[in-house]
Each structure stands twice: as C-alpha cells, then as structure tokens.
Image (cartoon, rainbow, N blue to C red; front, top):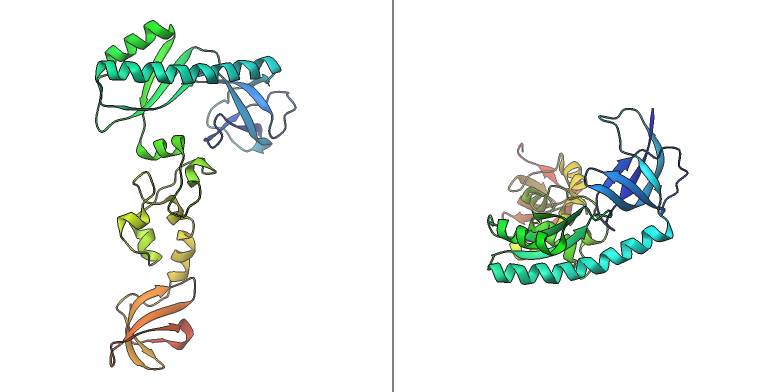
Length: 267
C-alpha cells in the first residue's frame, strides 16, 4: 500500500498525484512539488489516501508553501501578463498565423510556456529565438485545441452559465453525436455545440442514464398498439417514461406512458 495526495496547478486543472513523504497536509494547502517540468506550486485538493499499486514511483511533495513562495507566485503572475504582451508583439512582427492564449512560468523560472491555437502547423523557430533573447530562459510554444482554448479563456454557454470546463471539469470527456440522438435532442449544430465549436460536454451528464433506460424501449419507427389504435413510434422519452407516436389512422402525434403501449413487432 502507498500513500498519495492529489494536487492541482490550475483552478480547474487536472489532478496529479504525489508522495506526501512525512508531511502533514490538509485539503486546501498550497504545496511545492517536484514535477517533470521542474519545481511547481500547486494546491492540495485530495488529502492523503492509500492506493494498492503504483505504475511508477511518485515524485515527492517538497514542502508546504511559505509566505515567500506565495509572494514569488504573485510576482510570476504579473510577469506572465507582461510576457503575454511581448509575445503578442513578436508574433505580429513575424507575421505568424497563430492566436496566443496563455503564458505560464514554471515556479523555479526554468521554463516559460506560451500556449496558442492555429489552423495548421506554424514555423515558430525564429519566434522562439527572439523570445529566448528577451526572457533568458527555456522557451516552449505549445499548440492547444479549441476546447483547451475555451477552458483557458472561459465564457458563457448556451445555458447562460459559465462553461463547465472553466468552472469544474478537470478533464475533458469524449462526447459523441450518438448521445444527442439518445436524448432526442435536435441535431442542429448551433444547439448542441459549445462556444468552442465542439459538442457540448453536458451531453455526457445524462448519457448513461438514457442508455440504460432506453434498453427495452421500442425503437423509433416501431409499430405499437395504443389506447387510440395502432401507431408508429416517433421518439422515446426515457426520462419521462413515455413514447411519442404517430397514429396510423389519423396521422396525429400523441404521447403515451410506456405501460399503455404494446409492441406489435420486434425491434
């Protein structure tokens, strides 16, 4: 058995696991940890817990963050804003087709990472040399996707609330058009896409429930017997436990509870 703690480096970022060593740590503590990118400052979000096996040894939590560490972090945030403006100017000077999204210093200042989006590949070798001559540290330019861009910039979704990825979703989950079909949603891209242009993350929230409840339901276009006669299934409303059907005799659409409908042919 091994003891691990979970640490986040961004407010809604992915959780990474570390060895707490002999430190007494609580949720919400700011900690200094050793990562593959160097020394970083993060927030402990998962207190110490036991796990059965580890695929590889974990890097340690070095210490709780001190007042001096927090002061360094605040200073780095100010410098990141300045670096963003400088890099944007350099991008314009080099006439590169890329959109700068965010800048991040490693806590030990050993690396400065610039995040950007672009429609295709960008030759930024000259830009890197230019930035290195200004900041005198290791420079990394990392191309990210449109979902990561939305997560970094934030915004309001079609529901009118702050987008999920910028408020509580630590990791993106796979979302498919099948989920929208199972929930009988309009397949209009404008209605099922987020501000990133990809399918709404919230399609996943009730997907498992719909999938389990749809098991055994008559499929669309199945023939069923209703209190008003034979009909063809138009849609299944699993959450309500109803079927919407089109009556064969009148052509009118009607909604019936599942228990009032009998299947006339196999799915």
